[in-house]
Length: 198
Image (cartoon, rainbow, N blue to C red):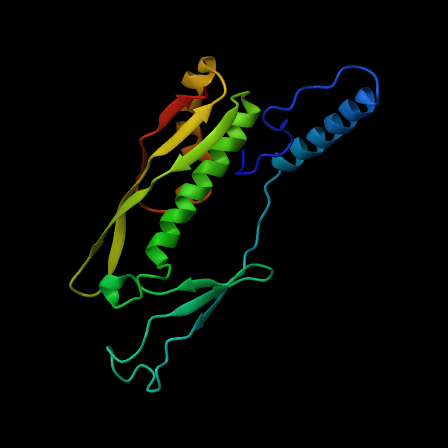
């Protein structure tokens, strides 16, 4: 089941009573859900494109390690430009997004989207979701490095206390299907908190 699992009823939406076109609406939804389910069952390749443009040439290019900025723009068609740089530990601008933060953000985003899709399909009504994610990275004397782990701490609020146990269990499944978590070579841990709406 992918991140944006289609064919599920939006949280909080109740089936309409018979009459006033309700039958036609149900038929339309049923057809859409069947088509979505068929599409999900097929393997499909997806393609993504971004552009990176270095903006940190101060006049002498990379003639000196300390003489150029790490600033750059991350661009994609139809989207706002994302200001990028290196981590401040590597002479970057701390006011701009660095690759390490973007990777961690991608993990947290992907987990959330996978989780919400699973919740919708499982009749777990999520009314609020927030996460404070952290990650650890080590660097080596030869200039290389790698992430060693990431921890997601999602705080999920559900509409009813009877949904809490299922809401907690869905995090494991979300990790299993998250595209980004499946693509990285380090463990992604989860420390979820489940709350019930007032």
